Amino acid sequence: MLKQLLKYEFKATGRTYGGLYLALVALAVLSGFSLRSSSKDNFASLLLFAYMVVAVAVAVVSVMTIVTRFTRNLLGREGYLMHTLPVTESQLILSKLISSVVWMLCSGIVGIFSFAVMLLALSLNSAALQQLPELWQKVVEIFREIFRMTGSSGWLWLAFETLNGLVALVSSILCIYAACMIGHQFKKHMVPAGILAFFLLSFLQSWLSSGVSSADMLQAVSYPTLGGVDISIAAPSAFTTLFGLAVSIAFAAGYFLLTRWLMEHKLNLE
Image 1 (cartoon, rainbow, N blue to C red):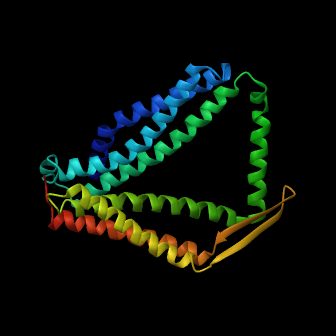
Image 2: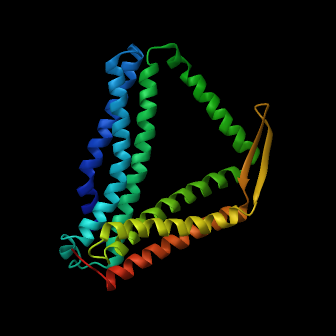
Image 3: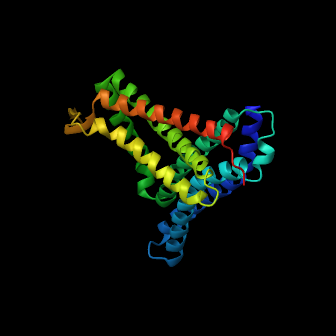
């Protein structure tokens, strides 16, 4: 049944995101060509401004969709139908969570891709375009040198940071869900209560996460042979990074359990 819920979620949100993604990439291409032809042209500036507006809109819509899809579909009038389906509260929450994570990742990828497309369009048919293969080769060589010196620890660090970012994203979305559930316990002040709950929960998690890292647990990592340049990186200790990941996982689980419990025992539909 979770598969059917996900299919419904992606179908309900796909058109909104699809249109914004197409607009962002199209404006990136048009802005790149316009800026290449004349950097002082008013039309080029207008296109660049439109690209920035749509980029901000993608970020705002991504966040607002997380809130509106959860509140309207599960806590609003649509909730009377959703909660009669032969599914558990966990499946309802997971369907919203998975679709939100996917769309947030897609928004980030499309944003990076559109910016790269704009730079490519800007340098098309110019001397810079001929230097792109050489520039790419230099970037690849730098990364190869980094991973050669760090060995397996470099790949381990990359995998860990990817996992850490994904857990942080999941935790943030679940924090929004928990705050929405808390806010709906206050019938006359749902929005202020939800916003206050979100900031309090976020502050508590941030305070616990930064408690260990602020205890002067930074270590210097130096790679003086990287391209002949002395590079020093201030990196958290292994204990600090693992503790931060553990806190994120614990809070994500706590947000999920709190949301599910309130949905099971304190559901307050509009």
